Image (cartoon, rainbow, N blue to C red):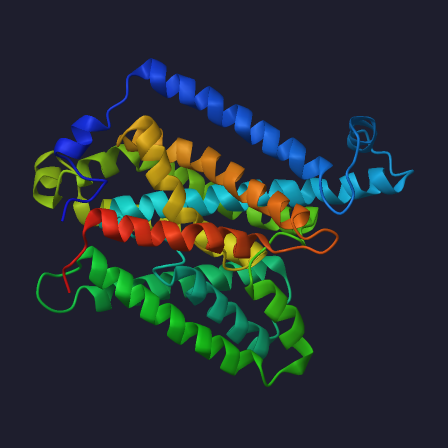
Length: 346
């Protein structure tokens, strides 16, 4: 199978000159600005620009201004979580050379979620920082388990085997989450709403507690961009070019797990952002991770923010969580990727 992160004819076809990349960068930035403005303006109430400007200045004298004040941290959190999940997915695809890699599909999100559930039930976790540390540990353990299971048998860790192992692990962990939480009626209701995945409960406090982890993961992943380009050529050639393959894989995977764990802790398990965005970015700017990773960060921020806006608008005055919107988009895309890549190895 030819992975979209590899070399060969596809790589030559997807190179982009600098002016094209710069043009797409401007387009992506413009779209991100538009969806951020839409996130502040639209919801159960449509707010005018005068009230938005007044609310940004600190005014809360009217209902519209108060709505804007509440929407600003929600918008910031949606952008941060979308960027984290998209970058995490792009790095996972680069590390595994698997076009089907995604924190949701590979069970990473669900591992973080189960760890938080166990922590809440057993030791009474209640702070965002504690959630994040526990979520990162759960995401890491789940990632290692899925990769180990996907590596069993003939042919090693093929894309389809890893995807199937991730799907099976996600289903099993989801059942364990229900088994852990259901007997605890005092936390079950709040946990059920959180497990759908969304940014409706955003606050500046939770953003501030997650931000150091998100920044650390972002820096680690972006610093691995050049090395991921070498890994795309194959392990032997990457080693011949001087890369310490196991170390690069471990560091890049750690950055992706930190991003995914922190994002899941503050927003719940939002799937498919990490699958959709990397493919789109490679079509726009080519296979060079030094370009595709920053682009994935920006496009992921725009995508999840737009999904949150759509969820608020289509069922007004009620809301549809962003995780449901991304699932509706991502599931058909996952099927498309599987068919396009002609994944047949079992």
